[in-house]
Image 1 (cartoon, rainbow, N blue to C red):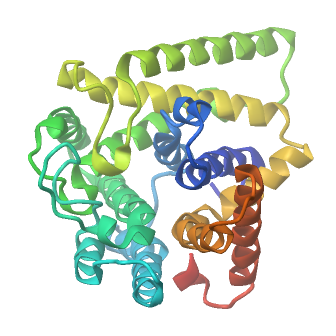
Image 2 (image 1 turned 180 degrees about the vertical axis):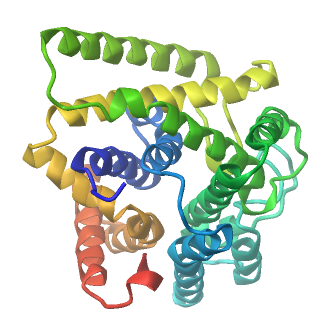
Length: 338
């Protein structure tokens, strides 16, 4: 799509805000756990919603996504490693560098002990897992668009997604989750007739949208209660008591229903200052994802030992994050800074 739509950016901005709250609000409120069942999936769905079959060659698409995602990944990863070396916090910088190369939080799923810390060894790096994951998903999507038998790529992604809970290690660059991310991108494309229709609606269409929102909220709550909290970064797609072929289904249901609800809500108020404000955050999502944890931790360190309410500390951290992002947005190195 050529034109950026505020409501699409607002959906991504909302999910980014939830990422920041989940990482920095301590203890994390229960309502955040409820709302974060599908928030990472939404990024992949919206990527699919706004993607189209490109006229560029596969090689050019890979190069374009490498500049867009891999270059900022390397830049912020190295900067955060260097900053981690000078902060008064014990960090295993060697394992942090391995984590940056491998692109995962730990080598094994968190339930396995003893484990090997990777991005976890330098905790400021932990949100960066998302960039190589969505990068590989984009490569799969580009391959799918040019494949003679695209259904074979879909079948491969489905099989990998289904059996991923059985993997003994977390695959490099979230390969198993990238396959699921690719399926979520295809889901985003499938949702185009619903979400990209005209904003001018009659009474009949309005009631249809209301019913759809209520239905999706019901599906989301039911899936969350059945499947439990998820964590895409460590390949946890929900309740391990659920038969593993169904985990990826519930995982996609959570993301799809959350994407539909947020899209319809922001489309309904797309000219409001709320949508425009959250859309700004959505347009900066990649950079904010990379910098928010380090900056937030630095602010929390300054407030340590002071009798300051959590809401004030968090508000200050969020304000500093947005201020530094505003400064970075004015610098000329856009391809590196994201």
